[in-house]
Amino acid sequence: MNKYRPTHNNKNQDGSIIVTILVVLIFLTALIFSLLTLSNANLQRARGRIMLLQAQYAAESGADAAIATFNSGNTSYTGTTSDTQLLNTSQYLSTYSVSVTDGANAKEKIIIATGKVYTPKTASTPSYTRKIRVVAQRSSSTTASSMLSRNIIDVGSGVKQITGRDIYVNGYIILNKNTTNLIGENITVVGKNTGSGNCSIGGTGNLVKPSSFSTSGQTKTNITIGYNNCISPPGNISNTDFNVTPNDPNLTPIQSTYIPWSQYMDSTYTAAGSCTDWTTGGSTREIPVTLGSKKTHYPDSGSNVSSSCGNSGNIDLGDYQYDITDNVHIRANFCANSTCDPVFNNPTATVKYIFIEGSVNFDSIKTASGSGPIVMIVYGTDPSSLTSVCPYGGAAYIGQSGSGYTDAPSLYLMAMNGLCINGTKFDSTSASSTAPVFGGISGKNIFVSSSPSTPRPLLLDPNFPIDQIPVDLAWREAYYTRL
Image (cartoon, rainbow, N blue to C red):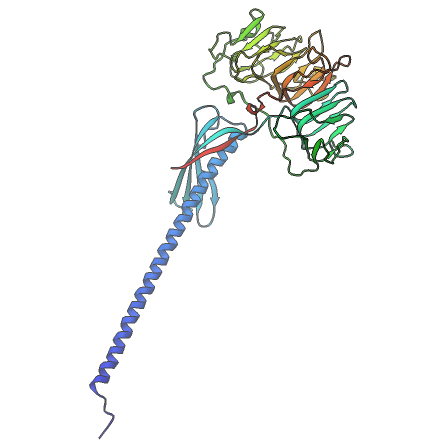
């Protein structure tokens, strides 16, 4: 008799274990399959997000390229004519296309950029697309200074003193006489004279602290220079009158002082048709002759000096007064054939701009008593006829002929090339005058001398609204929308 004979319960238990194992295997298989499916779906979604992001990057690249085109000077750019390839990899191809339309004014452009990703790269239609809208606006990162040079300020021996609130120079300053004083509240010089000493400021003149400051609480002149201050005192050492920061590696030069007339003159300004507003009339001439007409393009909105203005593109302004009632763009040289002594007047408190697509050649220049602020921007080249008296060019020239004197406290004179003040008599008062002569001056290079027999101070008005004169104008992204 077999006492270990199996029972029916053991058989049932063996069967139950097999069933349980099968159920667990099925569950695990389903779970693993679900996890694999879920993982694959997540990978596909992640890849899709990456490709959409790549399409967005492509669109943004197109918008950036359009803004770079504007900043190169091509503001008539209307966009791409076909898709531009951005990336071509083994897995995908990305492209962008751009269309550009004018915005609300000449300082605004509307960019619609579309980025596309083809995957695989041989696909005939894009798998992923992103479209964005960018509003680009032309704006300034900073504003002008009372005295601003993109290269050199050279002060001749006949100048008693120059006083300006803020003085900014990309290159260097040289003062050529030990009786010459340069007085400023803030003096910044980025570069240096390549001669001995690596001088940002050099020469035999003097640096002098002003008797008062425009900024509340300021008690010392701030001198910030890229290299050495070779005028001592203070040299490179701060003292009771000066805070000196020499050899500053973080200074950046002004890139551009160019201001296009479209910054302040939109399509509502129209051509006057001729330049007779400047050449006919009595002792006071309104520009434009018809008040409020906005006919202030002389003779039109083209480029370069127009031979139809005045005498073969040269206008003799004489000693007449010109009331500037609106912003003006003129294609002519002022006083190129014979120097003159004009008076300018802005009858309003709003800054008026005179854009001169030529050169100016004045015996003297004045602004009328009570005139509002005027900014005169000279785009012309340096005439070769002034080389002997203007070592750095004289596209904007103020001389010394005749009995006139220069007294233009309401005028900021800005030259894209050389600004030359040659032997000029500043105002009609004593050498100790405290009356401003200019609102400010700017040029690629600035050369200043004054009449040796009657040296006068060149004083720049610290209250002139230089914050309304933009510097380093550039197109920048102002608004961004994903469409």
